[in-house]
Amino acid sequence: MEKLDAITLSVIQAALQQVCDEMDLTFSRAAFSPVIAEANDRSDGIYSAVDGSLIAQGSQGLPVFVGVMQYSTKTVIEMIADGRCLPPEPGDIYIVNDPYLGGTHLMDVRFAMPVYRDGKIFCWLSNTGHWPDIGGSVPGGFSASATAVEQEGLRLPPVKLFKKGVLDPEIYAIICSNIRVADQRIGDIRAQAAALLIGQDRLFGILDRYGDETVVEAIAELRRRAAEQMRANISAIPDGIYRSKAFVDSDGVVNEPLTIALAVEKQGDTLSFDFAGSSKPCAGPMNSVLATTLSSVYLAMRHIFPDVPISAGAFEPLIVKRPEGTFLDAKYPRPVSGCAAEVSQRIAEAVFAAMVQALPDKVTAAPAGSSGNFALGGNDPARGRDYVMYQISGGGYGGNADHDGLTNGCSTIGISKSPPVEIMEQAFPVLYRHYAMREGSGGAGKHRGGFGLAYEVEILRGDARASFVMDHGRFGPQGALGGKDGAVNTVTVFRDGKEHVPPHLSKEQDIALKAGDRVRVGTPGGGGYGDPLARDPELVLRDVALGYYTPEDAGEKFGVSLSTDGLAIDRAATDEKRAHR
Image (cartoon, rainbow, N blue to C red; front, side, top):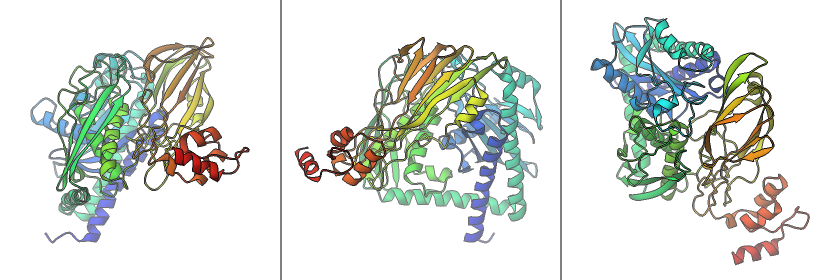
């Protein structure tokens, strides 16, 4: 075969990406649950038939799933090969959510479908969707004080949910018998399967147009180039070892912080990540399975080098030493509900804190780093049915060498956004009394962190139970190169006129609520970048004029003195204040 020309290669690359993007859109548009349909907590991709390695992933899918689905697809292939899983036939779709088989937490349910050409598997299509409930001890699955994975919900090994294109009624019945609001899951299941079928149809179009051999050659070349490009980026980093630490508030059971200790060694054109010295496996649900730990490193490096095309090749120069004996390598039956949404972001934060030393012009201060997991389950008497509401929220991004951090950005691990308030109020018996930017939450710096989100939800009718698995309630997102930390996450529950703050600050489960009770949340701001005293006083004045900071904040955080009316900079007083500090 003649060497693949650059134009054809580029077209095939874009076409494979478009296949994944169409799967993402189909999944969201057809799903019933707001967390998928509105918040886009899902992802789709194409994977190798040989080893499950990543070929392409949707640009609008959660980055944290980039390594996870690669790992889980590989596991399915291996289990089929050694007889632990029934062999596939055309039209089959496997379902799996077992965290220890290449997953995240139980609520992230993965589908995997083999794509056949001429009687042989050409590739696998896979996707993941966050189901709002998977059973377990509390509605929504975020059991903040679980001590075993069985308390978190239904755990599924790879089984065929669809056989030759037909939904298996027995497997479906088992699933529905173990989860809440089961009648709504058929919409998400059908949407998830439809996304894969759309992907198969679009992929056939590419194969029919260019030929199977040409597409296979293009996939191999794209992987090679991705590895080459990542190696070139790494080569520009000074050789050495870069160390950092990040902290998880607590595990939800033992009220003590967990430490992520990281040493990144750059040598030649590779980066090695060693988490030795991190905390031991924990009692509560903040353990991370290996697939999530790997994926967290990959997505952090994707943030740093976004120009590298996404494929398994991009990860080849990234060597992650297995963190055995730590909470970052969870084994059965360790609980893991916080691994994907929270611990993964602390791992990414550790990578950022290490790499900003080596690449100060490319790496930001720490972002909010919490998905703000708030699950509310109860009964709506007006509609005569149960419900499970899942609120995901954003926060501030860290400042960087060029500008201030983004305000109310999505979590580090994904593109998921808070569902619109109007949608949530239509779907659930709640009222959002407040929903606004959290002024002052960005860490001070030459370039300050972005601001988090402040919201308050009131229960309108019926009884409910609330659970939280958040983080950064004890420690704010780290500043970089002299910048200050962002504001911490806050949770306050108002019941019978009394305020309740969770003992673990960002984690608690099964809080009984009734009509009129309220939950108030303030998400973290991003860390500041650089010395706050180096910030342009005009930018400080602008922030005060917009209400982001108070005049007192201007003096305390940035060393800027304002006139009595707060409308102008007192230059002499500012110079004196900054000189003394």
